Length: 453
Image (cartoon, rainbow, N blue to C red; front, side, top):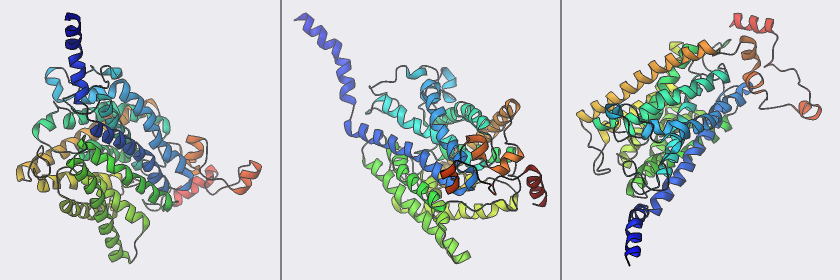
């Protein structure tokens, strides 16, 4: 009898942990992790369609390589730095090393993070955010950055910039979270963080060579529209899954993630119609993305009608920023800051105005005080990400050149950086020869074109 009693007592903690798991919550988070993972290939298509044909493979590779590099780093040390308890007062700034190599990250819940799902499910869901964030940066520096330098930068940035900001905003001890800054699914952690780094990277690398204007025509609009569709589909899990439970709050996140981008695409399209008499596919796609970005910090704190308003305002702000950017002479190639930086800033600030505790009791009602906290979160993240990213770029540049040389830039980075091409002619497919191309020009001709431009 005593043996049976001791066995039951020994098993009690295990049974209690098992009882804490909710299968519906777990299913939502695991499915949402898959949806968010799809966003990175979606981003690859979106960015790939917007560049010139000679750079499409290299551009897409810069998104996909983040899945490889950041995925490995997240398992080894990134997750621990972002979410594990830090040492003493340091916990406000950075996590510790208790979960290095995913030690202690198993099937039981971690109550401080999510009480009804496996710790491993929470970790995996957050991994997808860590992966796509540095991939966003690539859009500002496409068509001129070396893959070797980019991989080294992403490796360092994910540990030195992303992990601390994620800890500030989302970890239980993080100082911005403790202050009351609201970021439901990553407006600050993902989009403002990446946009600040993208802006600095565009400045450090300089303009693309030989462009008569700071904008080039997309080579494949259907790619861009497909990428937007994949992003929007995945974004449902990005925002809805951030509720971490199969609940009414998750439903609110899903609902807002449809309606805010819809309003944003409509606002962007109408703005084009008024100004140009036409509505472009790239414009609709860009508007929708701006709406997705803007609703991210607010998705679990505002009502759907407020989400509509937020999406429309963010789209018009980003539309204005995209139009104004060429006047600055800045070659943020795919307008990462204008869409992600401006859109996320609008979303974060309007969260401070439109948030309602009736939607999420764990949040706050909109007020001047909350607006100030949201503004502080935006400013601190921009300054930190921008300053540290500048230092990392200089460090990487001292190790290996950041930019490809002029001849490779004229010829296309697909050939020089990937050793392959996105498109081949019929003759090349049949005979295996490389036909002359306008993308591949002699050095003297390239120099002449550059001088003329």
